[in-house]
Image (cartoon, rainbow, N blue to C red; front, side):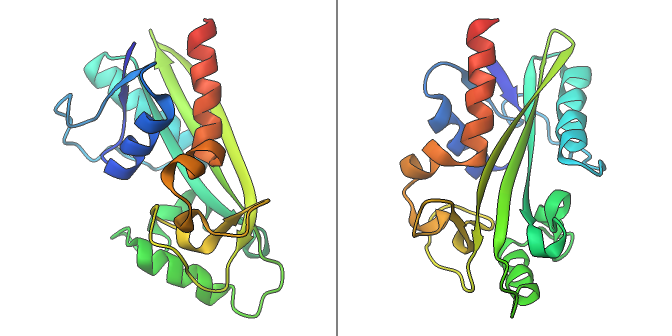
Length: 191
């Protein structure tokens, strides 16, 4: 099966193709010649994921899916949440975003956080949504060079190391995105 993954994020595309294996062949936005910055104006992960997949389906008439992911920190009332990519500004600078979190978390004992991914799949005009969550803690300083985004400051529950210290195979087994994709794949195989 071929599906368009509505992203220009090479890291996400690679991570998802690794998780999916050969079951589904992913096409990127580049592959379908979509160079438009797809709007993400929703106030929830669900709304943003839906907005992106609906844009691709309505404009290109291809079965597709999109995701939106947020880091939700308990002590910060769920921040950065839906604003995770733009937490420190519109330039979407991952390093600045991470530093802003570390700065806001200084002196806070409650380090509980979770990564949450919502996938919106549209097949033949019908939308389905899938959610994946991984709980964990925010570190006091960054560690590791693998992964992207907030990975160097997030320790998943049950592990002594950050996502950025794990190899991609290990991370892809337990990540929020992997858990959402698992539900997506199960749905596609059983429909």
